[in-house]
Amino acid sequence: MIPFIALVMGAIVVLSAITALRHPNILVSILFLSSMSLGASVLYLLLAAPDVAMTEAAIGSGLTTLFFLFAFRHLRKDRES
Image 1 (cartoon, rainbow, N blue to C red):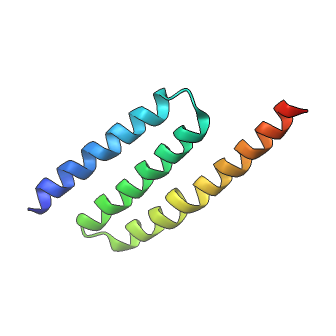
Image 2 (cartoon, one colour; image 1 turned 120 degrees about the vertical axis):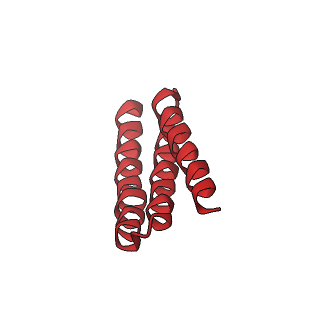
């Protein structure tokens, strides 16, 4: 059962990455990048690496998304002025 779940999560990660690269809206790309990282952390958990999964969830999904959203907000302010 776990290999099937890992296969599905791997497909979700790949599809999220492709969508993040191809979507014209930057905000949607940031959200798909975050979901890709969260899916990767679930994969690490399924592969019995909880320390790597926790690090990926905290830094990859959390902190990196905050940095991207912060930069996106500043980009919008620069375009308006």
